[in-house]
Length: 75
Image 1 (cartoon, rainbow, N blue to C red):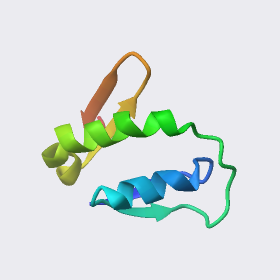
Image 2: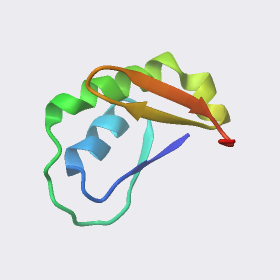
Image 3: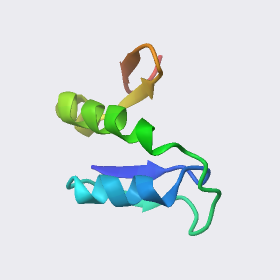
Image 4: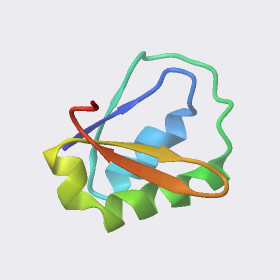
C-alpha cells in the first residue's frame, strides 16, 4: 500500500508513516507545514485497524468525532 500525503500537510506526516512501516509519497517536495502533529495518531490507528480494506481499496475520512471507511469504487 502506498499512501499519498497531501501537499498542505507537514513533512512529518511522511516521516511518521514511513517510520511505522508504510510507504508514503509526498504530493510535492515543498508545502506549508501546518498540520498539527497531534493528528498523526488517529491516522496510524486507522491504518492498523483496517489494513485489509485499505489494501483492497477504501477511502478513510478521519474527523475529530468519528472515522468513516468507504470501500471503493464509490457508488
